[in-house]
Image (spheres, rainbow, N blue to C red):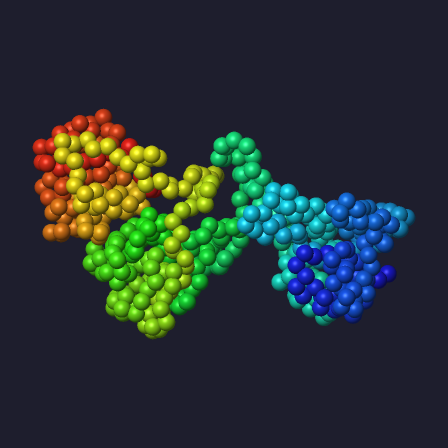
Length: 516
């Protein structure tokens, strides 16, 4: 009995050569619709599935392969005599190789302006049914859903006359991973179309695909890999093109992602420097060179070995300044040819090209954090102030226009600083930043100390309320003249009174920005 291969693919890349090689090996080729037309047009002898089932394709091609003559051939276990007796009695012949890729649902829902009806029509029914059936009978059927597996399977058939058990088991795994991802895309798409404002489904299925394996994780003894969303938002690190340097590490990706989150806060030319997931320097200016110089001068010690991201094209003058110190990563929307030549002289420097001008997250964006036994899911923190309002002046003295500008910068920075977080800013530049302390006064003291003499006349931002007036007293002693914080402490009045005593302007935003 001749062996049979069923081929029905949406992506027809390489399928003609595959069919030709299978035919040389003595396989009978079965096919449907557009695939059969492609193969026949290339001179491959093809038998229609309709000839096998004795039933024509119908319902605009929705029903082609859903038939016992097909699924009996896929599911019959060759080692089970009763199975083989039954299919012989029914006139069903086994199918030994299945090559199928599914309707392009992902590509369809990605098209601008695509209709709901078109998306529904691109949900494959027969394809998933066949590959799942073939994969269930994996020991007898080699089922290929990924064109990358064509060559390996064909080589084994040509060299050994059969596909190895290990290969068939791996192909079986890929089928169920593929259909799980496919169904996840469909369910997530449909959930977003439901009426109402429900954010969190009763059952959450997420799917990612591996972008790269890594040398190690957070520490050398931990293995790691980097996965990307199936449809990542614009401006995400997964979309970056690496132009120079070693591959990104686990910590590189985590830290760079934090830097890009902070960069989204700016609609003018800005440079953000990050070290160990915390900002260490932020500069805003008319040119990228000036912005970088501000970011560097904010903390020339911590930026060493850090990550620098910008929303402006890097020119040669800026590249020369950047090349003077050791940086791990630079991310920009583009580089001049001369700038890229300068940066590439540092062979280990990771230079990434990414459109960092995207500020808004896509509607419904979520962030997830794995914990032992569960998953935390929340909306992206994409708000700087409360909707429809900015802040409330709570002191006798209102901030000046200059202090307002400094406060907004401090507030943007502290939003992306590990809690308890304090950020001090002045003249479009970050000064001292106090991240991740277990009490707020320590974070305040740290930020003040790191600010140096520039602290006089600066603005301070706190990611959460002051529990006592000790932070205000520290600000007064240092010469800080403006404070922005959420408010909400039962001791708020103590801090307000202390500000009034020292002539400090303070505003309450009513919005906290914890970052854990």
